[in-house]
Amino acid sequence: MRVGIGYDSHRFADGRPLVLGGVQIPGERGLSGHSDADAVAHALTDAILGAAAAGNIGQLFPDSDPQWKDADSMELLRTAHELVRGRGHALVQADLTVITETPRLGPHLTAMAASIAGRLGVPAGAIGVKAKTNEGMGFIGRGEGLAVIAVALLEAR
Ligand code: MG
Image 1 (spheres, rainbow, N blue to C red):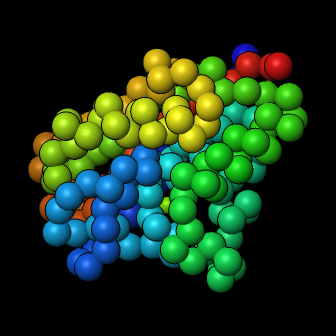
Image 2: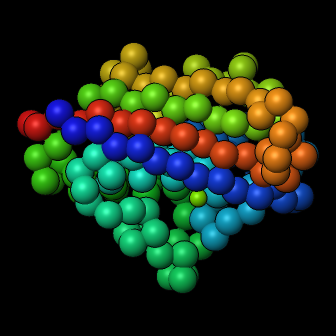
């Protein structure tokens, strides 16, 4: 068994869709970024790569590379999982926390977990997604952006 942690944060931006875990969340603002800025997918990608000591998302998919502009980050996540599977590790379980003041993500958490599980080919119960606010503190509290923390457990296959 191997465990990995991932963290990601993105700044909110007008005129972009908000996509988290491959689910489009209704609202006025999305996240800025080179890819589709899906911070949930990015944090989980780093957790999976970290558990396998296989580097990080920036090494695999550099944001200096035009081929990843507006990339589907769920596909980057799937590719990272395939990479670690190729090294003999498979995802057993992941737990994620999204930290943001707005929008309220409660109604979307089940869809996000199902979306991730579906893309990675793991049982729905293997993925947990939670959300909380930052109690008004710091950049998250001011509504400048959001952050995601992910933990992934891999086992040898
Ligand atoms: Mg990111």
